[in-house]
Image (tube, rainbow, N blue to C red; front, side, top):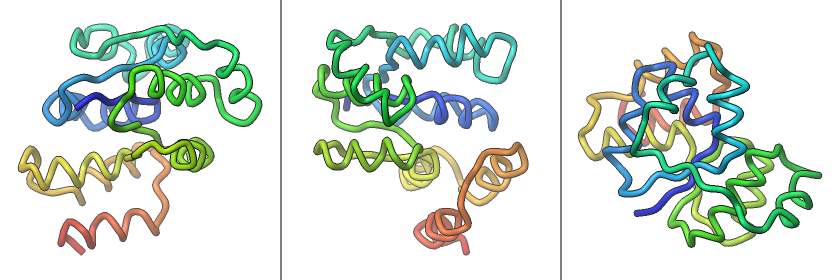
Length: 161
């Protein structure tokens, strides 16, 4: 399964030491150049920078259609815009994004989407992790924005209330 991932997910998973879940769950993980730059160059020295640079299994790829990226960037961040365009260019199975506007745009463009909380739920269902609650709590404690609604929904789906 081929996925294209945004920076928020990479940073969040790195904050809780679970970046390798992406490698375990998906066959091919791609990030566009804008995401790589945001996490590894502009974010040099911050959480996620070294991990993304050193993760040989994460494929950095340039988008071809810069015009559409520019159009989407009027409404979305550059990284999110490139995730959508690269997803289309690679015919990705899923986009891994958390930004609400980007998710709405992705769904209207026909993409299947999943966010960080969904990745953790999937990892539990696949038995890569024993529970999601402790990881969601750790994310919240490390200032990762996660709405109460999503938190409760994921815990319910995980059977962890």
